[in-house]
Image (tube, rainbow, N blue to C red; front, side, top):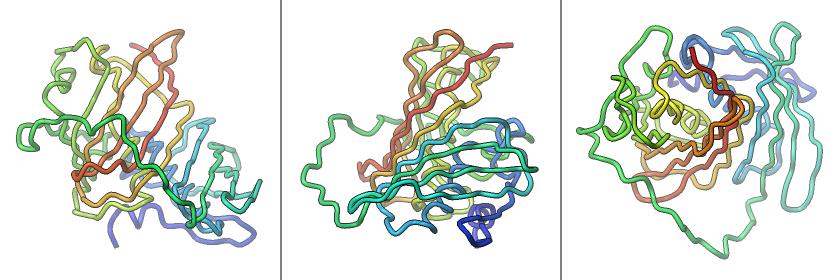
Length: 262
């Protein structure tokens, strides 16, 4: 079993309750990555759902999770022929940390139109991209191999750009294949786009994250891009895309986060 699979493992407690252990293997500055936590939530929802396709999960991060035991409580809130919808509540030490909504589609939904009005991000070759350096509290990048396009990687050396954007390649360091649950992790693993223009003194804690899985990727290395257009009133948005190397869109995201400096 790969590390990611071990670290999202859940125990079914019955009555739509699940327990798990948040690992410190997917942390950013000591804080468990929001996409990693969402993968655990999505797994609990999928175990409760009669429908499995194109999941859309939106999570509100109420307060900081820490490595350790969690309990996830799932409630079905609506059902139709096409969709089943759930609410999830995540608790640590009897305190609610995350509340999420999830929508799952039936497998008989026909895709009558397949139209892309955007293309995958243009990236330099993997060999010319910049690998994120390994740092003790940033264990996420010990276990995910991120290669940033050199055109947006200057913020690591204090060389800022005019565009709040990060883009590059992702794969698992241990070679694990990319599946549905791992897409929740990967789409939230890109460093904040605002770092490209604001530098490494920016702090961008997530308030709300929405992830929609569109297709399972056909390659185990993915092209990813994260873009911020507006920083106002101490808030920013970040729009993410994940593509496989064959040009298939795998997932999209929208994140609302605080913007702090110092």
